[in-house]
Length: 219
Image 1: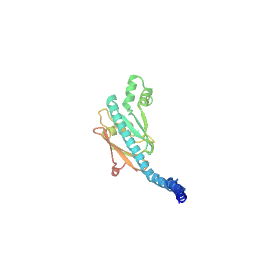
Image 2: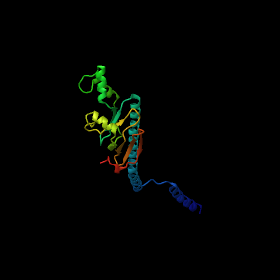
Image 3: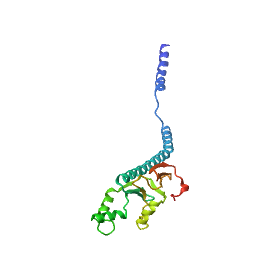
Image 4: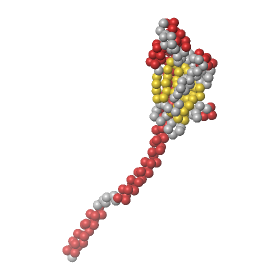
């Protein structure tokens, strides 16, 4: 009897050990987990991409707003008009002094003019004070809406009736008295989202806002 009971106990020992042992994952289970991870990554990628594009568009709009503010301050401090231009469908822009015919006259009286167009002194000064910049990757200038006023018209006539430069937008002007052109600049991100920076001429203050496409300026 004792031998029979001992035999039964021995039979149960391996079974208990086997029951307590943790089995490894099967290949099917690993493939199922991997498939779930792929689906989750696929669902999250567009959201991450859109968020990144939205961030770049916001940063670019703030960049243009800052350049507007800087141009206004520079114009007030220097006593000379400054202008902002950009290349449409690119992220390139430039802020530079606005060269007037009177600038050449001043250099002629000072004896620094070469007598042909704008003197080298004026050109060197403009080049030194010009700021060339670029928007965030994937963000471009989509257009503008610049309102003409009596001062810009007078300056245009002074320059011979044309302030356009091939490949560049019409200049947005900042005057020494703190005022500026009434203008709206439109930016477009990779996903097609558009935002705008509106410059109020009377105050020279720029604000970022949702674009009013009914006003034109965007193709």
